[in-house]
Length: 383
Image (cartoon, rainbow, N blue to C red):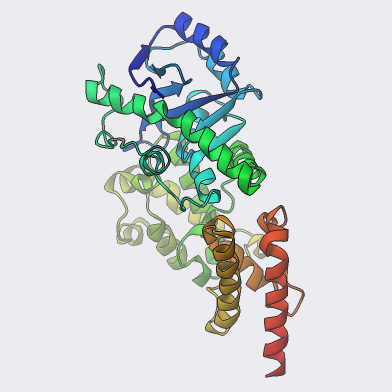
């Protein structure tokens, strides 16, 4: 089959509106984005590629002004948007269009459930299913330059040229193995998570070694992290360009309240010291005045060595199931799911599963994991 791969440049509002009307009559379209993010918090859209099986259309975000037809297309529930490893693309759409495409079909997720490998790159997937080589030499290109080079245009077009064929083959494999609904469920979760309102209140929990801090120190760290999250977005600046997490941790641990001590904290950018020192110090002072009742509880430390046998038993169970099902274990369970399960029974109560293991994964591994945990607990009690 001849797959059209010549790039078709779209930089006029009326062109795009006409094409969107056509694409809304299709069951699926291939979608990809190119963007820049080296010096900003938010990705800057440099290009949108759409493949419809007849052509590869390259839409210029720098010149298109009427985005309404594109928004309507991305939200049209009758049109499946086919993307590969789409988490960053969803950020681009949120920033540029203010919407999250849906329904979507992520070919990387689908490839894993089809038994083709976990976290498989797009070029590897195309080579696996179509025995076609796709060059990846323009990955680090400047997608905001104009005009784009011939090599960039060709690269961008190839990213969507084969995607609908790949989509069709993956659908066939997933229907045969009766795993299509699993993929749809995980893709729907991607959309739901991308649409959630941003909440910075628990950002402090992700800071390395935050579990070593006492409650009052955590109260300081919590407020510092909220400030960093808000300011990084407001200034469109990468978080670490503002201040790194180890620096925030050090400020909270030492309860720093003066510029002399703050200036000795490692790795604080000079610009932040110059512009934000007093704000940071005031955040610390305000946090120190908080009532004890508002302090966060201490965070759980890393799992103790004594939990090792249970963790090993749980992983062995999943690995054996995954081998039998010819699935990567990573599509079934995440590291934090194991930890949630182990911690749930550490106080002597019944073991609990995280929400992610309570859907279709429950009958596959969730129920079995609970039994393994309960059996392991009973055995340890008899020793």
